[in-house]
Length: 129
Image (cartoon, rainbow, N blue to C red; front, side, top):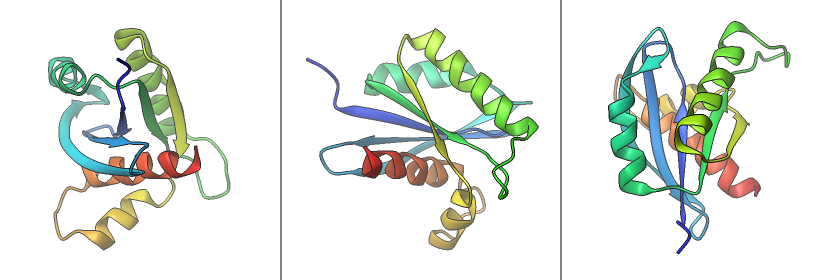
């Protein structure tokens, strides 16, 4: 049986937010914030999440400047998405994540909102597709 779950990531140099969602409801739930060292996560943490949820697709936030130009973080997020695809043999989708962190902070009093940002990114994709 094909999985009904999608996994979303909010890539960052120090933290990577992760969320799970499904098309049926069009909603996503924050799961975890994984520490990263210069954008490189502890892959065992992500392995455990991927094994538990067994998603059918990966959605990664694409950090683009407000003027639509690309930045170093844009390229690093794309590289991270490509690594996820290679590691888990799943397709990935890149979703514009502009203002997702600001929106997450508006919805939370928590200091770290990377997982909530991942949920917002994932919900954007779920509601577009």
